[in-house]
Length: 140
Image 1 (cartoon, rainbow, N blue to C red):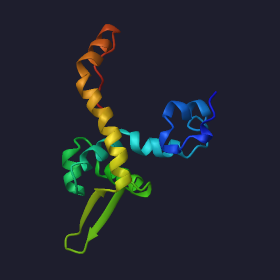
Image 2 (image 1 turned 90 degrees about the vertical axis):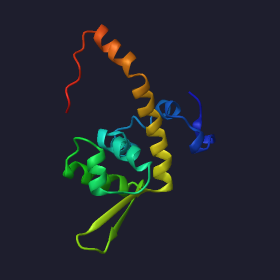
Image 3 (image 1 turned 180 degrees about the horizontal axis):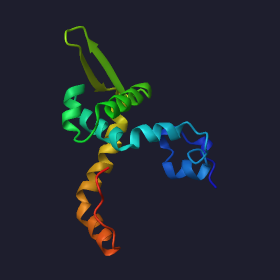
């Protein structure tokens, strides 16, 4: 196994981290962050916010199927992780605006790459499912 301690953190790939056991350790804090970023709603929030500032109601409209509760929880988690900034405006009725932080933009670009790959390869993926006898996925 390679000694990754001599490599700067930004140059260490996920595969190298997995090999070192950090991500796979049950008490590794990265698991919570992976859950926030890679959850269905986390991914979609990050991708939508790449377009710029959005109010809560705009996010909810753009992300079909997300409940108000799940969107609120997702935004809270992403804000706590330092990926999203929340700005409450002192107006009636209250308006809240959400934007990506610089770190949030970094992770959103990574997630956007994955979602783009999935969409571009969807016919191949569906063909593979069909070849394996897997029914079309039911919406959750």
